[in-house]
Length: 221
Image (tube, rainbow, N blue to C red; front, side):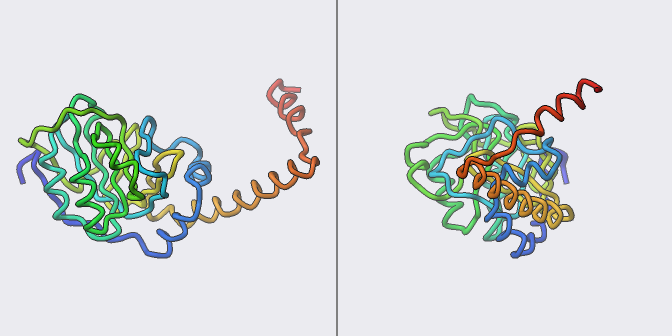
């Protein structure tokens, strides 16, 4: 295929049990169990805050042009998260109410756009997950080029087709499927520890003695 116009088949779906488990955990917990160095930066939820989890279908497109995004719909299955690398450009919106409504109707689990969207008033009223870098009223071009199901970069995070993509009001994270069981297990353990810490705070017995010990360690004492 011609470079710049490549299209690859849809990835294998992430196992349903992993998707369901990820949907029930905060992105912050999952991120902490990926060494706190993963995850997109600068993308924000534009919908009502409903959490997102699903299998990545990726698009890389020229800034401000959404022809490849339309093409990618043909590679999507229910449960996919459409991840669009628009280079972070904010001059033209790559999606709006019509395209996100189509994605929702097609059974997608959400869309992530490293670029701009529009029609945010309508999108904000719906539970369908939409994450984007910014907003503009200016519409897109439809000339190409663009590639589907290739590795992309979203807010400094590399996403491969078939990754487990999760999102909530804290942001968006992609987890390689091979790493997902360990990340999920760590996040569940951390959730239990944080629940215990919150209970200790509520009961007035939260212990901060570790702070002084940490300072002494950092000072080499």
